[in-house]
Amino acid sequence: MNRKRFAHRCWKKTRRFTKKLIQYLFTYIIQAFFTVVFCIFLRLISFNLASSFGGWLGRTLGPKLKLSWIARYNLMKVFPNKTPAEIDKIVVEMWDNLGRTFCEYPHLRWLCSHYNKRIEFVHPELIEKMRDDGKAGLLFSAHYGNWEVGSIIGNKFNFDLHRIFRQANNPYVEWAFRYFRNKIPGKLVPKGISTFRQIVEEVRKGGHFALMIDQKMNSGISSDFFGFPVMTTPSMMKLALKYNLPVLPVFVVRENGTHFKVIAEPEVSLIHTGNMNADIITNMNNVHHILEKWIKERPGQWLWLHQRWPETKWVWKKLYACRKQWKKGEFNAEMLAVSQKKHEYVRKKKDYFN
Image (cartoon, rainbow, N blue to C red):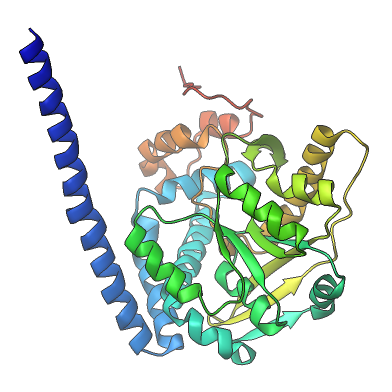
């Protein structure tokens, strides 16, 4: 009996090791190889041509992907009065921007030293004020326009801008992304509890951090986004309230394909009542409302592919199943009703259609 059990354990470990090895060889390495080859090709052609190619690729392939139905559901939730045709138009614009952004990555190092040719900085005095106030500061943005261009603030205004980011699953692809970004002054700090201490240390030294606030964090706090509850990270507001840091909104707007505006808005007026938990939620709601304003102005420039609301991860599949009706311009009334319901955050899947 013991021999059989030992043999079974050895077989399970061998199978697990083989599975990881196959994943490593055939997924990570091959994926990285094609990523590097594609990036070399994009770097050999001009910035305009690379961006145009990415836009064409995005517009042509993106809307046909099953993934696009996540975006359609999110748009239906936020803009219930828009027709399927209007939503599809925004989806095409989103994929155009996403394709351009990806194909512009290999030129990010070039942009770091040629930003005056492509980037207009709006309200630069707000950034200069934060840089020169003698204390740490936080800049927040979203996956809007070419969001990587916003980091070039560090090059333009000559200060270290540490960036909090999500690492790629593939370590070799992550290396390529870091290579493109390494001309920007400042550290790259991966998201996670383990790196929070490092962020606090830099803040105490007067460092400036930039981060995206439009991604879901299941272990975070519930906040209001377009009138619906979402899970988001409280880290930014914890730091801002605890150390009394200025919080500056910065957004990148794509114009005429390959030109950008980096727009800084006035510092967010933080609410301090003494109740830390309540203040974090109130201030995150206010920050999300700033983001809402930008998304409403140019919805095609925001990345709608995030499963931002808790029910998105399964309701979009129901919408995909009704794609024939959608193409005819028909809304599913039941799904529209579900999308407008203010769902409480749930950790287990719940089917609202049964």
